[in-house]
Length: 284
Ligand SMILES: Nc1ncnc2c1ncn2[C@@H]1O[C@H](COP(=O)(O)OP(=O)(O)OP(=O)(O)O)[C@@H](O)[C@H]1O
Ligand SMILES: [Mg+2]
Image 1 (tube, rainbow, N blue to C red):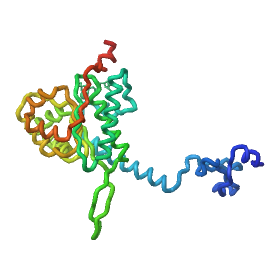
Image 2: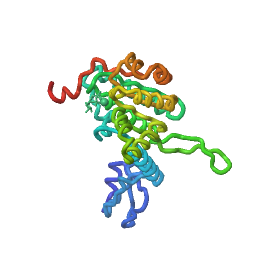
Image 3: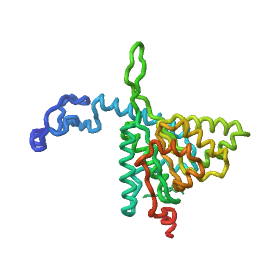
Image 4: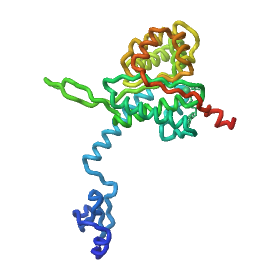
């Protein structure tokens, strides 16, 4: 086949030998990694460099690890929460557009300070306003921006090296978690589950505590939150709640709240004035 006309017309350059038939391979000048054989039709369109492919595999492995941890340590009502992201958050008015922009810029800050700049983020507002959706979207955004890892200093042999470790993230619906705590007293399987989730809540790089304040009135529950805040005082935390600041203080006391406020400056998103999306779906 005479390809000289095509070659000049589309600015191709000869770029090697076809692995299938041994004829010449050609690449568009602007895309030297894409090669095609005019003889047998071989195309390397999906071909990335070996290094790029290895990197993709590495990121995919980390992603699997992060999502396995998230699935195994989370406490949720419906697994629908795992589908919430910024891609499917569609603002219907200016207020929601502002929420999205604010949440995106907080995610960026969180990703940048993932290792040593803790943030406590509050998403506050009425039911159906999109708090849980935004909380999960923020977590995914941070994972995307960090490529699922954080750098830590680790002793390797005699010296310290910077190594990348997968991030640990978890989602805990607080009232379900409190119910699990109650049930775990008499049920070994629930007790095992509770311990797993509790450990993740205390140690994960990012924890979402969803729907704080919906659990029943019990000092035992409030105390659990106090204990958690003692441990997560300097770790990333995203809280969604229907309660206003005053009511949170009344419920959990000033000690827990002052720990929460420690890294919360400027990290508050109000959903006031936003429509209830569950009602909108039902056409109300
Ligand atoms: N802007 C939006 N675009 C797409 N879906 C949205 C948007 N806002 C909310 N939703 C959807 O509306 C539903 C309710 O949102 P979500 O569960 O996040 O509300 P919530 O504020 O957490 O409510 P609650 O206080 O009852 O927990 C979800 O299915 C969510 O995906
Ligand atoms: Mg919610």
